Amino acid sequence: MKRFLLALGLTAVTATPVPADPIAPPETPFSSGEFKDLARDLGHVMSFPTFDHANSYGLLGFDVGIGYRLSLLDADTPHWRATGGQEFMNMGFVRAVKGLPADIDVGLMYGHRIAEDEGVAGGELRWNFLGDGIVLPAIGARAAYTQTIGLEVATLHTASVQVHISKDLPFIIPFGGIGYTLTVGDPDSAAVAAKEVYAHMPHVWAGAKITPFPFLGITLQGQYAVDAPLTFGLQVSAGIGGED
Image (cartoon, rainbow, N blue to C red):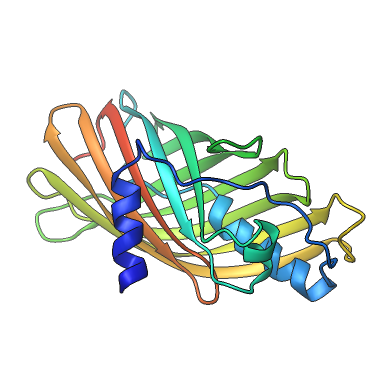
């Protein structure tokens, strides 16, 4: 509980970023199993974030935002060792979503670790197959892809599929979902005693988009997967559409 509350506090105070260390091979090389765990954890942390409701934005709709993600690193894991014993990993990002015909949205994202030269870029495709009604919530499906940039230890590719749900309420849209991420890790360093690995990560997430003013959204989100870093995020965005 203390780590959870600390994460929420650090996420909210984005003007005071957590000091960062590069993700690099440790003095003792990672084994194949350790590298697979590292790829799984980093894939979870650096995959395309879900900061949105299930409704489509519509043909004229869009949403553009900037945000911050904070991940908690457990001690003695490969992820923790690769960052020099750092307890937190933080990343800023920019994200844009555009509505298309047939209740389809397309999105792009670029994230960058604060004070480091490591980043991730990706895209998403979403389909809203059940619109938000008086009683029933909106339900949609989502596919996303990312690739890391500038990591010394590896190049990671992630592919995610997800089902998400949301309900439009006055001034707030709560949302959540379940998903699955496949991470392909290609080691870039001779200090990693491993070949290409494939890591699998089921996950869940929940959040809320607060709309205090027209065209403005403030989104809080948390994501969880078994034996993986907890991630929390904050996004401020502007746009139109996406509400029934």
